[in-house]
Image (cartoon, rainbow, N blue to C red; front, side):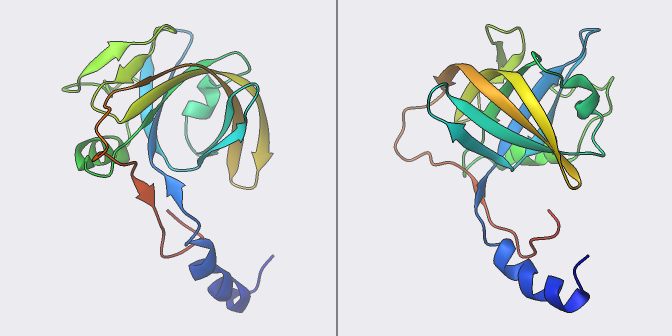
Length: 165
């Protein structure tokens, strides 16, 4: 366990590690679908194309994510605070997370957010525990860019404190 003094030294440095801002979408076996704001997503492999996705252990979405589960990962653009705010509030399992949003259906049956910068479809390959999060390895099976404008750039998140969102 780190002392408060060491945590105070680490916090501002760790918080400067940049991460993208995404909406992770998944479904359960009963047909419910939801999305959550996720900033700990990173490319992990070129061949096959894979990313890691970290989800806080307190999120019910962990119960929905198993090996073989379909997901979509929607990258938010820097200029789009609407998606950030919409998914930042969180949703209950039976709540419609996509109300009033423009979506299309991915090949895996999950929503793609058409106002996002881009969307990737994938399958959970494996998972591992990492402290207070679960890390999922997701193999990307399809992707679509929703804009080709060079003026639209990804939302990159820098935290003030590396020990909380």
